[in-house]
Length: 293
Image (cartoon, rainbow, N blue to C red; front, top):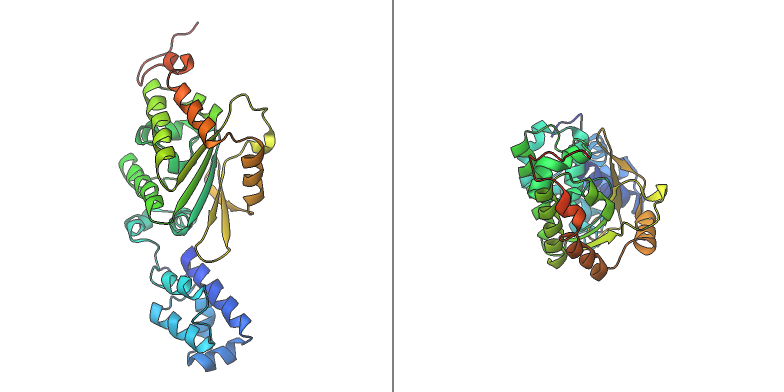
């Protein structure tokens, strides 16, 4: 790990360790004496600039007297992944630090709520959409500048990651977003992919119907990530130039869910209807040119 640029796992681990030290009411000097370590090293650990081993973390927690705490296992687990999940490591040299932290956060989350408008959310994209139509719909450089093959490979890892036991991905998409897909074959594959996701364990897919009154308040996509065994949440917002961390959007998500999202059953019916929608059939195939008229 680059000591000048600690990743989000290092910062989360450091934050949890700092909170723990503060809960047991020790300053740096007192904690260093209890732990038998250098106070400067402890300060660097708590800010993410030094990475303790899992054994180091377990010993720290034991000496703080909190090894049995619920969050202890989370901290030890984090210490085992200094660079994030194994599948992301080959891409680290090609990813900007912010994007690296976004992908690590997503991989660590136990619950992901993703709201899509203007484009299909990354974790709900079929391969053809991701390769051909997704970036044209609303590019935000989430592939970090990777070539198309590597970008899809990375996205495929991210999409398969939610299938681990206990992971839940909740997807709400503005149905108008489907109108932005410019090719019949891509649209058809994407709709079928959403139907497939709706049948999978660990996924829920809902649509905001096209006839819903548009509100500017609901016009921007975002994700809300929640983490196992702790109450932390992280919210993300993609845009035309990148992706950024934003204030917690849980209340905004709950409002969209309550006010404008269709039920799971109604959303599935809308997707099935879209497969035979005249607008879908009128779209050109990939490579065709739509006639002006």
